[in-house]
Length: 121
Image 1 (cartoon, one colour):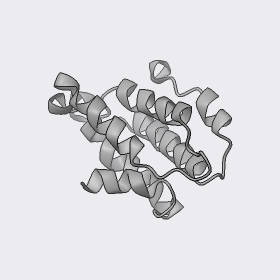
Image 2 (image 1 turned 90 degrees about the vertical axis):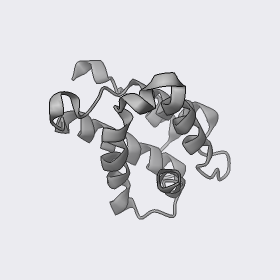
Image 3 (image 1 turned 45 degrees about the vertical axis):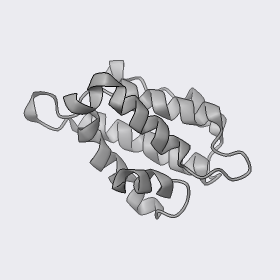
């Protein structure tokens, strides 16, 4: 419930200064085996992104789909028992950009074509 509220807040009710903390909370959780098995992560992420309020068509389905792929493709930020700050920072950037799109502070096209390629890291 708290995680759904955090994603809901990305649409505008969460102060921008707090948006990176959403990534800090969900980053380690995304790698949990219990979430990864059986499609639980995909179900949760899809529901959380669908819960983000839409204003004048923003965020659109393509933007939500891009964010969903980012969440599902993120490598485990806690692999090997340590937090990989480079991965976590990239997730923060993606969450901030998504929140900026939701608030019409950034063009959705810029978010969709941005290179959030976890393979580079």
